[in-house]
Length: 499
Image (cartoon, rainbow, N blue to C red):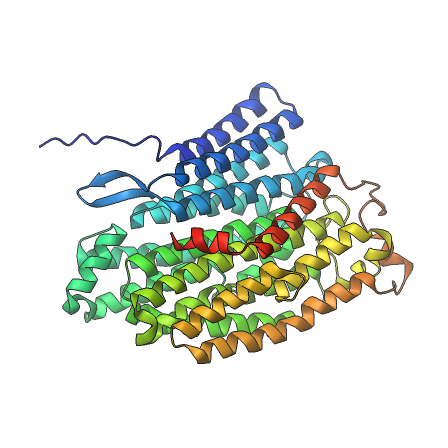
């Protein structure tokens, strides 16, 4: 028997590019020792990874590391979409980090290297075909963020956020590994498609208490990664303590990675009749608690963090339709999976635009401040405030933020097609609740300042004297344009998500 396998290097090209970026950043920082060169290498590597993912994904699905019909690496349309989005998010966050890096808030080499390592995990995650690859990729995405959260020099809040994030993530990883081990004990398989086939063809396996425990533990472990209620408590403190660009990465790329992992096991491995009710409950709790608590927030990043929790509920909502028999038909399931992925893509683009807008309105290296610090921002920086406001309106699902509007319509339509009208009603009610705090922040941008103090806290006017670097404005402009384009042509994302 020939045990030597052929490796499809074309299928692995996006992973090569991402990992190569991390290595090149490390070498450049060591040999050249010029921050601009290090940042340039990281930016070009992220852009190359996005282009490579798009080119490989444009062709037919490619598989490698296969044993028979079971493959550990499957690169198709959805994997390409994830790779492109993660790489572009990394490029955007790197751009947002330039002012703080130039001000010496964080070491440039280590920062760029860790960001590239995290990007590598996100790219691999989209193509994972077995539980081991999936969990390792998810941890590769997450582990560098422990350090990035605490990398802001002289900040106690940053250190506390890093410890909180680390402790919670260790628990989540332990639960995910335990769930995977129990599934292996029940089925003897690790490949996602094989797990799904075994559990579908052998009903007696699904009836075992050990299988129920495995499914529950695995879902709980992954629910931590997407900050779903009641496994969300780490998110607000971590986001608020992290540097603004790192908080943006946590809220976008990290959350997207958690969703991709959750979707992979739900779609391909776990029984829909067992996961559906759990996901429906998580969706209702997550969107409701996230929106209600966001109403009380006065710190901007904490408000965005609770908003991100609520948005995770909207992302999970289509998967909740699997709780009903009508939602488990092939057509309804395909629509639910595509809606979840599409909503996640719409969300991360708008969320990046929101954090870019906030970064542009704050001094270099500063935290997000309070809502009062943003009062009157539009009077001093109208274009930055307008872009920030457009992102917030989009997250609320109102025009002219058409990307957010179509995202919510996509979720509601998938729920109605799956016979889950009650869950669609919950989504609609929560969307109304969310309007209150999104519009409150937007209105504050055009409100007159209450005191001279908050106005001085805006970018370029604070005691730091550090003006907004042009690259932040570029990131804000690109993210805003991307949100507008997606709003005008949402079917592009839906088609890719359905592949």
